[in-house]
Length: 285
Image 1 (cartoon, one colour):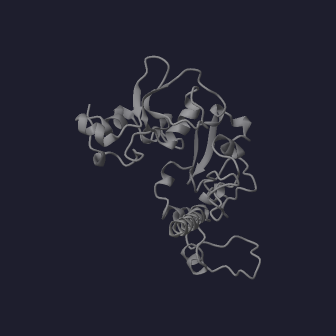
Image 2 (cartoon, one colour):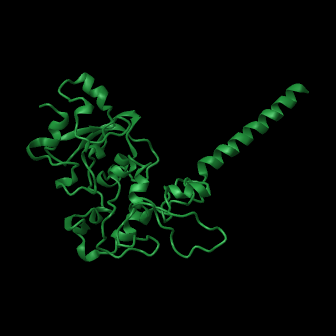
Image 3 (spheres, one colour):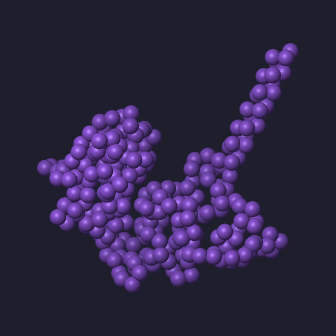
């Protein structure tokens, strides 16, 4: 009888803690107490009144987001820019017509969608290429270049849009260690840039070698722990000596270490490679 009672109590506790954990994980991430609203807003919302317009912030919304999301912003869509194409009504710009974090993200919605999948607080129930096409699929007249305002200057660069639904036709990535998965950003890159790997694949993609073009091309590893590699190869510089533009993902090399899809540098590198400057940041020779 005692054993039966013990298991009943244990089962109740497990169910209770599981319910609490699920609620915490799936709760609205920015669901603060009313007095905590002042961390971002200039006033506390009056719940007895209907809010007809967005509440104002104590600072630039992008700066407020970066207080917590310091790493997420590194490879994110540019903010503080005026888009050259028309933007859907459900993706609001700020009062100056600029893209902000809140253009794509509804910061007060739930973490997961109705199917229980991560929503990343996106304003639409689609992700990846389909989400990008909401804005970037409209301007077919400027298919090969993209122009946007960056501060006081206009920037024109090749667009990813023309490649969104095309594969390159040959395998560029070779997995060398399936037990060591690559980062999510690299998986997204491979989804478009390697015709043999789907962007929505559920299969773990391991560390490997990326070939930059079909023939006579340089290759580079991704998914490799940089510090471990540096200890075994003294021609590599210590991580702390590298330009901060070069990013690592849990200490590993990824596509985003050398490339940023929003960069204005040639081939969308994180910094200029004139005189092999980028290569020589890591490689002494």
